[in-house]
Amino acid sequence: MTMRRDVRGEGPPQARNTRHEEAAPGKRTLVESVFGGHRVAEEAAKGGTDAKARGASDQQGAPAAEPGRAQAAAASAEPGHPQAGATSTEPGRAQAAVTSAEPGHAQTAQATAPATGLVSKQERVVPRIELGGSAVSSNVTSSHVLDEANEAKQQRVAPTGSPTFNGAAGSNDCTPGSVSGASVTWTVVESPTTWGVNITGFTTTGVINVAPWPSKPTEMVTPNTANAVDGGNITDAAGNNNWKFAVKEMEEYNQAGGGRSSYWHSYEASKAHEWAHWNTDWMVTCIGALWPAANADLDAITIPKASAADAAAAKLLLQAKIDARMATLDAALTAKWIPIPDTPGVAGSTGYIAGQAMLNPLIAAVKAYAATKKWT
Image 1 (cartoon, one colour):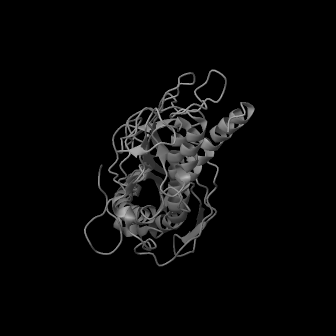
Image 2 (cartoon, helix red, strand yellow; image 1 turned 120 degrees about the vertical axis):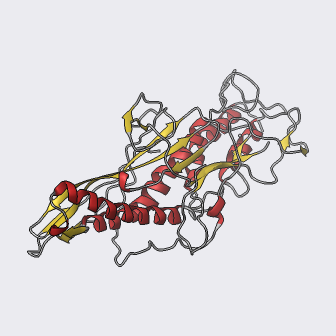
Image 3 (cartoon, rainbow, N blue to C red; image 1 turned 60 degrees about the horizontal axis):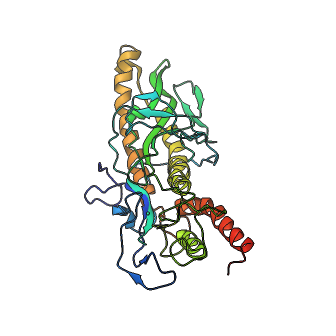
């Protein structure tokens, strides 16, 4: 995992943490042939990695204010974003449309890996295993003087999210990429006395990985996805396919000490978990909060007209200023991302909330089937 700088104090660079599902300490494997029996030594979950790589995310306290800010701009972020996913490998800055691996998402991918290192957010695994391409609309309008005549421009650019989605990965995690001067598109604005900047677009990239989860609807085996029908994989007999055990495992997903069960889970739950990190934690909580002010600052950048012979020469000088402001934004985004909760049962842990919402219909179906069978 690539490392990147976190702005909190003047210590050494920290890692932006990857969000992912994880194993809860103390959970034990149930003996396959016995329901309600004793628990034995922990076993690794099937279907994906489960080590939580929070790193610097375990630091407590409010994120540091963005360095160099003399003003703040508020923004409202739209919660419903068109999703983007891709079957390609990690993204860089060059974008290309690819075949969709994620239904409902506009598919984009990048050719090279980003210099990222935002430590991924992942699901917690119990040892006993979206909207991508979000566009966050900012309601902040920046007005900046471009010359001595007080010529003003109105600028409002909605960020575009373009993560690479891998639905056949070996882990469940979400890692936003770095932002830099290459993340924005812009034009040179000429006035009688200055050369200035007009931001026309901003794209943020990243990687979302989701591991396959077994779905064997007619087999009495685990790990599995619940299929509570006659001839399905739920029974009232002792063992891991017992309906009460299946319900318990899924209900504990977003409870304290819970997480992704080694026995009963679903691919859709893991997918919802990781897309929630992107759609809400990254595009709204981080980008939505910090981009509007950065957009305003970038639009305010100017250099004296006499410092560059033409627009091409001015663009080189202005790019250096853009790069510096985007580096500040990148550091502030890292500081805001790190303390976002990602623990089962903890308020604000959007991944577990989203994953539980996908498991609840399966839980309800198992309970309803048990009722029709008069299982108690």
